[in-house]
Amino acid sequence: MMEQLDLNQIRTFVRLVQAGSFTKAAEVLRQPKSRVSRRLSALEKELGVQLVYRTTRQFQLTEMGRVYYERAQGLIEGLESLSTEVSETTAEVSGLIKITASDDMGIKQLPSILDEFSKQYPQVRFELFLTQAYVDLVKESVDVAVRIGILKDSSLRVRRVGVVKNIFVATPGFLERYRQWEDLSQFSSLPFVGLTVMPKLEVFRGTEGKKITLKPHLVCSANNPAMLVEMALLGKGIAFVPEFLCVEHLRSGRLVHIYKSLRGSEVPVSIVTPEQKEVSLKVKKFSEFAAKRLKEMLA
Image 1 (cartoon, rainbow, N blue to C red):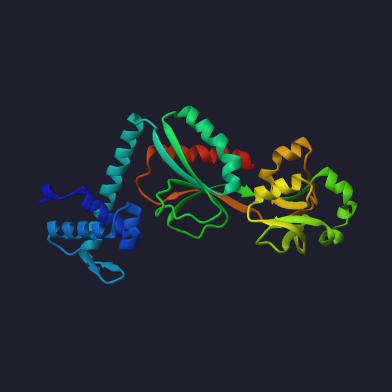
Image 2: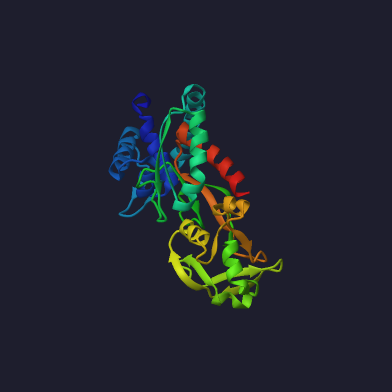
């Protein structure tokens, strides 16, 4: 009987138990749910025992299923670890890496990262999907995501690389025209370019972190911070935007950092990959490289 056992069937059973449901196991394994069910049934037939009690929405391990899982888990993880070690010593980093990121982070930070990585691994190709919308990595077959904000999906592998800090900026010419900017009580009378979803600003003042609310006078709104930077550069108003979008303009003097005693909430930035046991060498190498470079950029 042992000669007939299929390691794929055993692996499917282990991943099913770890995932907690047929649906989640299918996502992790990137297989149809029907195939997961068939492989489990085939394994039970080969063993001659029932491993799980099935219901419409979930399953429960039998006593024999619990014993088999405890032994099989170590076997599968040991074989996968061995396979990874062997493949990484001989494999070439090559192939397509699918990446998603927000428009602003993607356009500003990713080009130099992709350029540096491709110089090390010239056989790698990239496909980028830049959007402000949430992308389901498993459903869209995306390898790596650069996410800004609090992550709610616990089924993802997350590596935090830094935080985004928003600052107030304006051009020297704008500040010369609107000299009342120095008096924060006059803030609501000043032209402001801001996010469409941010009719008011909640910021923290000084080292004590006192929370205050500002009501901006919106003359232009957009759903993309990079657009707001461009509007600020044209002198259309004060902007409250991610610092990483302004670094070059601050150095050149085209923009000035104002209201330095005020700060917004720090928003986490993470490298995210689907939660799966087998991570390809190209994705592993790129995730590590991108995480290191983003940490440097956001420091």
